[in-house]
Amino acid sequence: MTSKPKIEIVGATGAVGREFLQLFHQRSIPHSRLTLLASERSAGNEMSTPYGNHTIQDLAKFSFSESNVVFFSAGGGRSKEFAPKALHEGAVVIDNSSAFRMDPDVPLVVPEINGETITPNHKLIANPNCSAIIMLMAVAPLRSLGKIRRIIVSTYQSASGAGAAAMEELKEQTGASLRGEPLEPKILPHPYAFNLFSHNTPIDANGYNEEENKVIEESRKILDMPDLLINPTCVRVPVLRAHSESITVEFADHAPSEADVRNVLSHSPGVKVMDDRATNTFPMPLAASGQNDVLVGRIRADISNPNAINLFVAGDQLLKGAALNAVQIAEMMIQKGLISGD
Image (cartoon, rainbow, N blue to C red; front, side):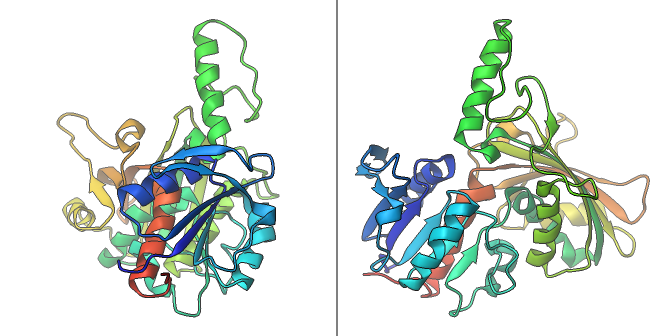
């Protein structure tokens, strides 16, 4: 990459914002300027980065007139308020919130799956929901083996999906529980240590929560399969930063063989097969944490349905589920000349 864009991070103090900084450094993302933006409350504070200390600037007072690309990871409200300003002032926006994901004019992108949907006319790119990304990294390659009719998925979602404060709450509650102290939920609605509960998002009239509806709607858009049947159950589990998912993939005709599934997945970028029956070693959140690849295992025929196969996956929610996917979008756009700089 020869272009050196001016890069801004909105929500730099959050868990995903900090991952952006680490990834820029690890992947040698070129830039001529790096600006950390947050709320007025954080403005003026010094933040340690791989590039030395940076002073956090006030998002509300910042001008994007010289910006080339802005990463938003500060929630849907902030994105809706400030992303249009950044776009109007000429920047490319890669948004990690749900604010624009279902806008038909905004590409919803996982580079390994549908990166070709980004064109020179697109200045706003949406980064998908973490559970959808991690699931589709394993499911999308299987389209080469037959038409997929239905997906049934149960997710086991980590604290990081609810932000840095939820991660700290899990740590604090775990210690309190081991000391025999009462647990006092503050960030999440129920005691979190040694517990699990339905994903903490509102439930609609059909009994599905907001996270489950995101998995359905976003997966259909990413795969360009508007009629795909998807039945998700999303659960919050006491894990710090990696999501796991149990997936059943039903095909329109007979399911492919286990050998064919393993072969396709072992050659799929961003996927690592971990499927050792002899040692009972399969994807685990501890193994996935800090890894760029999504781990896939428990590959087996569904003995209850000759048209289906079963998988178990684990992926780092802060990496492929959020920051890494957004950085990969930027890398692809820089390589195509869709993001330029000095």
